[in-house]
Image (tube, rainbow, N blue to C red):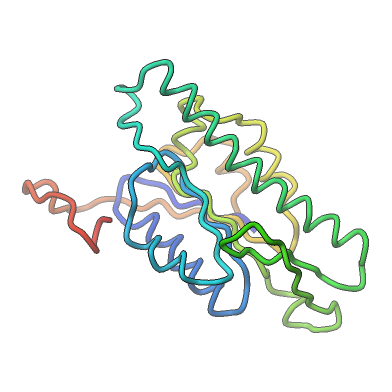
Length: 208
């Protein structure tokens, strides 16, 4: 199923992080992809320590969209496409495993390195059959799609061809219509109050 967490309130990424940790605790596997964010955020320190989590992100700070040069936009678009393409490869491996061995659900293991080991869940196991084994997080994906900083066809393809054993989580403000239509869960996080309104800057361990 597909989750969408949007709105101007704080907590969208925090929701995605919580879902990733919950899936890891259930023995599943996670790809946690961040878009637009070149800076490091503290949750990544923990996620990278979990053997079944693979973090994908842009490792360069490009600043705000309205401050980017044409060269910056071209570079970050290429980096975003590389992330989506790596996720597509992982999804294709899942589908290939399902086709080659229909008696099992075989899920490539998402480790921090590039190895793709396989875990098996038998079709006869009701718990495995009913529950997803993978979460794919696309954190802040709405922004590159809205600002033409990613090949949107790849994003649409991922939404359309998501395997049954996988759960997809999208976050970001101003989601596009096709994201809303594709979602099974959609929560809009609304800001009522925020310390920023009082001049309080982002704080380590709270906002990043």
